[in-house]
Image 1 (cartoon, rainbow, N blue to C red):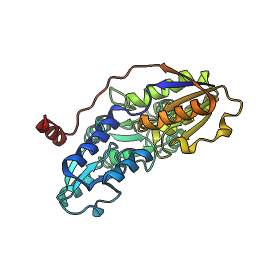
Image 2 (image 1 turned 90 degrees about the vertical axis):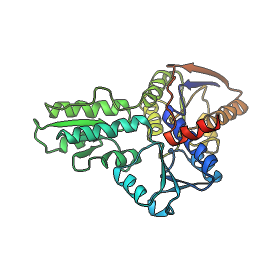
Image 3 (image 1 turned 120 degrees about the vertical axis):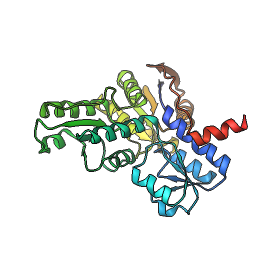
Image 4 (image 1 turned 135 degrees about the vertical axis):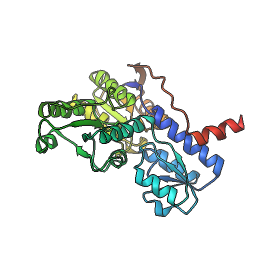
Length: 313
């Protein structure tokens, strides 16, 4: 068997920043540190931090008054920030800067009187936070069919934003349909789908033709990981989204000579390497790393944590 290991894969700059933030917060403040929603959408990462004393909550009334609270990489709405202040929580904001960019765009367009179409998945933490910036001005659009159902006049003052972890191809199809329907549609000067999402999708698009099976490391609630699996499947691969070695089924590899391994932006390298080791041990696989694009993006820690790190230098 030949294993093609995609690069780039796994943690992006936003996930690295959020994970480092929670690690430092636990070291600086001790446990518990409360986290609003999962720090990132990955079972392994969440469970590892739970064992270290992080407490993940979906409602701020679960957090004691004055406790330490970290906002996850997916961002939160202004209402959540207000409640955190009201409860006198020591809030540390680990929102990915690329998500913050979308929030700021939503505020700008709403102030300028636009109706905003947010292209994204209903119920996703990032979408909930973004729509909370201007709920009266935003309409969630999940598909081309949703565009067709819109009853807004074709010459209305409208703009679109996108969730950062979407399929590039799916988003482009929805955007094209919006452009067909709305003559005055505007958008931010720089697209919202993040660099890491695009790069990992590009790698699958290029490398999937070299393999029969594609393994995507990532959790079921990880949007960008799901998109990688869908993309590989669309390109003719048997494609599986797995959290780790425990999810592997030997039947997937019967009479298979080539496997592509990649990982969503919230999947740690440890689980990738465990899968590689399993394939090498079981099938005497050879591993070839294929790099489609170099990444060198780094996001700074939240200000309060930068100050703590500086104080220990």
